[in-house]
Amino acid sequence: MNYLSSLFTSLVLFIVLLYVVKGKPLVPALFIFGDSLVDVGNNNNLPTAIKANFLPYGRDFVNHYPSGRFSNGKLTIDFASELFGFNSYQPAYLNLITKGDDNLLNGANFASSATGYHYSTVAQYNVLSLSKQLEFYRDYQKELEKIVGQSNASSIISGSVYFVVAGSGDFIQNYFISPILHTIYTPDKFSDILIQCYFNFIQNLYALGARKIGVSTLPPVGCVPIIITLYGFQNNQCVENLNNIAIEFNKKLILTSENLLKMLPGLRLVLLDIYTPLYELVTRPSHYGFFEARKACCGLGLLEVGPACNSFSIGTCANASEYVFWDSFHPTQAAYKFLMESLNSSVTSLI
Image (cartoon, rainbow, N blue to C red; front, side, top):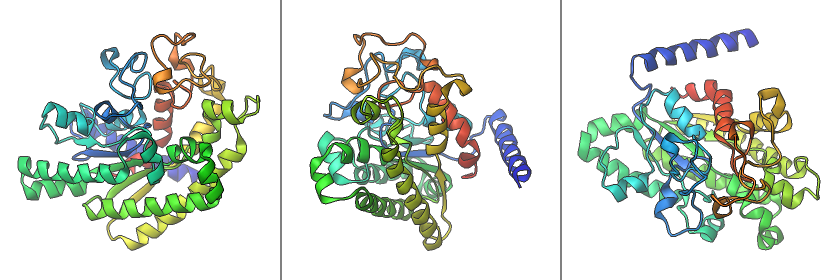
């Protein structure tokens, strides 16, 4: 069975390569929704402190430019765009509006750092909620129709691939630090609420024409440097009781996704497991050519994130490719590339 699975994966990747060599993207466009793991600069245009449009963010990106990505370089979504054969990355939608750019044909990125499934996560940071991201997507569809016509726009919308990456902020930036939520909800109950929000979001996205949707699981949140610093009790190991919350959430995500597949005709919904490869990378970094998984590259690597990770941060590493985490919350470009390589077969199964 493993042999057949490997053979199928190799065949799919071979077909992908043929299309890319011919210079033709595998799908009409990509659309991205979610949080800082996939935000490519929408927050630059929002009145929020959650931004990454300054160095050293982006120091290893194209032209060493701090685009707003919470990393030293590319994100997993950038590698996915390359895998699908696009010559340019899907732009931040708010940048398109600001610049008056009508080049919408490759898709758009609506993600906003610090957002989440739960309304209280968004309210704290003045960023784009998932519902607001959908609202912008509706606006995008209207603009697309003006450019290519209704029939062509419908074809692009139904044939494109959609990525949804959210949930980490609901726990790391909200539930884990909120005494109110802790009082009202158990982790299990809070997960149920998030899963219902996820269920509603996919239904709404489907209603807008999406048929090929990739959804990220939660990562091992207990292995994030800032979480180990705050809740590890001076232990440098992953906080496993918090990882267990992510594991239980992911189980519910699987069951809910299976129900959505039964309910929504023509839906291709693929879960993208980032928990397993990231946990493997964090717990055995040297096995994959990494040097450091506990401390992040930026600053002292224990608490720095967002504004605290800046060009004046003392101790920022010289070679980020040796580190799993760029700041105390987000992976490096090298780690994102590792994740994409782990997800190749799942991502291409959306085609």
